[in-house]
Image (tube, rainbow, N blue to C red):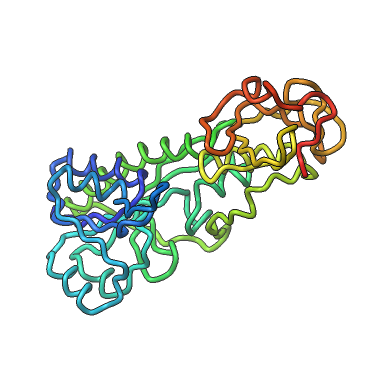
Length: 309
C-alpha cells in the first residue's frame, strides 16, 4: 500500500512505526510545522517529524491544506490511502478525496462518544469506565464518518490520561495495521455512526485545571487524573513562602469530612465539597514530580492548612 501518513504528537509515532514495520510504503509524512517551545522558544519539530526524518521519509509541514498548491502537492503523491492520527489540521474535501481509498483516521475514543480534540482527557474527566480506539473513514464533519473497526480499553479507577494515552496508542497501532491489511484485500467494511450518545470532547481550557475544592472528591479525582501529565490540575496556596502554584498529579479518594480545601491531617488529606482527597504526588513550578511527603518538608501543610488563596 502506498500510504501518506498524517500525524503530529507522540500518540501518532507508535502507529507510524507499526505501519513501517509491516512493510507498507509510506511515501510522505504530513505533520504540524515546528512550533516555538522551551525556555528559548526555539522552533521545535513534532515527534512525528523527528521520527519520519530518522526513517528517511519525506516530511511535509504545511500550515494549512486549503490552498490549491498544497492540495495539488498532496494529490501528486498518488497514494492508495492516507492514514491520519492526531494530525491537528482539518482536511478539506480535495484532500479527503485524493487517495484511492480516501483517508482513514485512528480516533482515540469509542465513537460517537467523545468526538473532537480531547477524547482521552474527557473520558477520564467524565469518569468513564471504558475507552478505546476506532478506525474511521474521514468525511468533512468532525469525527462523524463511518467506523470499520474498534478496540476497547478499560479505564482503571486511578488511571491517568497519560497512562490511557499509552494504552490507546498501542491498541490503535495494531488495529490500524489490521485495518490496512483488510483494506488491501477489499475486506474492510464501514458502518455509519449513530448520533445517539454523541458527545463533543472540546479542547482543554487552562481555566479548567484550577482545583475547586468545593466540588466532590470523586469529581476532583477524575479532573486530576484526566489532566495528568498535561496540562496538570493545580492548586494555589500560601504554604509559608508566599503564594505558589502546585500541580497535583496523583490522588486517592478517602473517607473524611471537613472544610473544603483545608488539610484534615498532616499527610495530605484535603477536605472537599463531598468527601476528601489524599494528595500522593505533586509538582512545584520548575521542579520534578515528587511525593507529598517530599513536598511537605519545609512547608506548612499540617492539619488545618488552607490549600487555596
